[in-house]
Image (tube, one colour):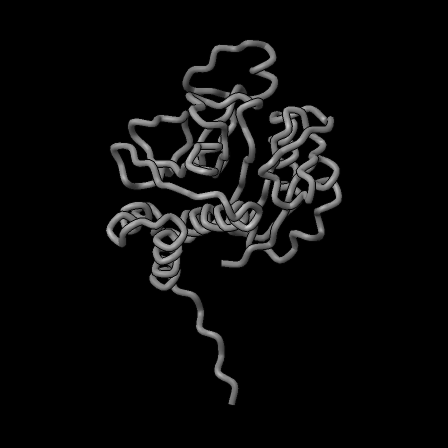
Length: 232
């Protein structure tokens, strides 16, 4: 008799995630436990699993890259959007031959293209001047709310079925990241030569647990989005 597949429990998911962070970032068990302190809910655990997926994709694209956890005063990843705050929140530094080439942050707001081009001063609440992304890969030493020319990759992690409403949301975010043009992005792992229909040449990636994601890829391809079905 074939054994039925066990349902993934929150405890098992966190255990796997903890092991993945230890393996990919070379950190201790205690540090990994601290990072995952806010991941008691499936949505946050899924988001942090997408951090690991992003690290793995970037490493597969260029095996010379290394990834180092840089800590703020908290060892727990941020769980509410806001500006980059180096003294408070940890991030992952991406290095090539010992030199920092990018930084990976969690739950960061970026300056909207429309606000950037109008030289708007942004304060809280940001209203439509800035938008939060679950994961942001930016140029080293970026600060506050990164501008579109400082962004390498924006990543959204959605633990749900995909829908047209979510597609509209993603396309709206995309329009506030770039113009429709051509540019080269060395971190766009899904493009063999890194050419994206974007200027500034940022990439936008969706990881979604909904198996219906492939049904919505046509407009995504046009705007240079990478849409990935990633199960839990």
